[in-house]
Amino acid sequence: MKAAIVNLSGVSVPRAFLAQWAERVPKLLSEKRLRKRVVGKELSIVFLDLKMMKKTNYHYRGKNRPTDVLSFEIGDERHLGELLISPHIAKIQAKEAGHLYREELGFLILHGALHLLGLDHERGGAEARRFFKIQDETFHLLRTHL
Image 1 (tube, helix red, strand yellow):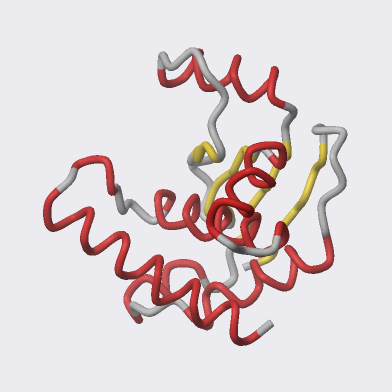
Image 2 (image 1 turned 90 degrees about the vertical axis):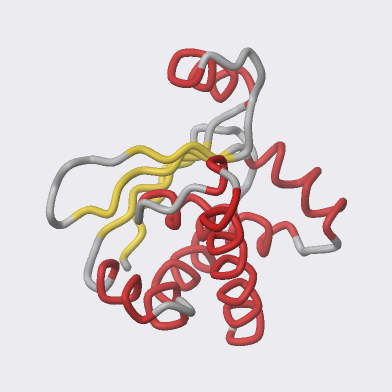
């Protein structure tokens, strides 16, 4: 999966690391069926500041607060979709989770990509368990291979 990265946040992001991370996601996804759906796709990743993320989250989800990642389908065969990510929130979450900042950004790319593949943890139950199982297994593999 090739990543096109745009940074509008004013916070530095490790572009080379994140491009490598995105390329490895299809190879390391723990579910073979999902792997096939992302191979050769492009993923747009846009980093936003807190104000822009809050405004976008409110517009699309009705939640008047910034969030860590938002996923949008593009509707094009070549593209998996577009992710909007807040590096400000990623820094906070990285500390809380004991990850490096760059790993947390990679985690958010993985999380958003799973949503673009049609998985949704917000529905709860078996679907949430499947989402988090795939996410955790794949994140572990990604961390150990970079």
